[in-house]
Image (tube, rainbow, N blue to C red; front, side, top):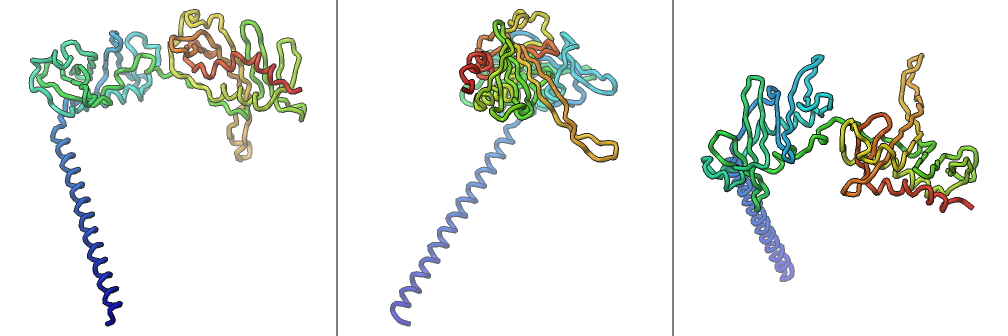
Length: 350
């Protein structure tokens, strides 16, 4: 074998050895990491403690605190259907799935660690004056109250205890976050309608001092949208502006429910709204025809929304015409609609 061949062979052998060493190191690191992860999981499982164990299907009463007020709910069956009801007003529709989820989480509440075996030092954990008291009661009359105390400044977890039982625990913040909800967050209310821009034929914006309509122009090829003023005069407007304005309608949403079935709309500036918007659009549904074939049916729709005053965060109160629920809508969507009378004139096609 020549010197060059010997040199290449030696280099190849060395490369194989180095590769084998790196593979060995890699496998060792992977195995070490896996063992450490298994240790952490085992340690975590060892620290976990069952604080509450109840059958969620049998829980028919639940209450908790929110801003110093006790929110209480009961479950009952009507027409073979179980639903949750607010104790203060059964006419308020409660979202069953939301409350079921809250009950399910609390009936199987686990502590991430035990911090005290007794209940002698509640004040150290904010449990002598708890931030929340969550009470569950089942059909047998068994009642459990979970006390929620201070937040651990390092982990962000909450201190918790069962009233009348020894032991203080930490629980994940996600385990109790649902119980920070106000009543309106639990109401099953209507959603903002899904409206596609290409189905809109007309948008009317009626304010206290002026009224304008942005209407699809089907009688000319010169422009796609036209402005109709309060006096009935018309003018074509820039498509870009019209579609930008309509986006504030189609992409809007309710950011929250302020009050269900309000009895005093003047509180929200809705007895004399700053703006009333009316959207005429269509929806398409597939229906079975006489011959058994599926046909597309187009149905005209109208959505009317009243805009009132602003809340402390700058959002606007809003109310659909067909009910007295008061919602909130972002100012980003409302302001362009309030300014439409002036802006539309600035976008007239010459």
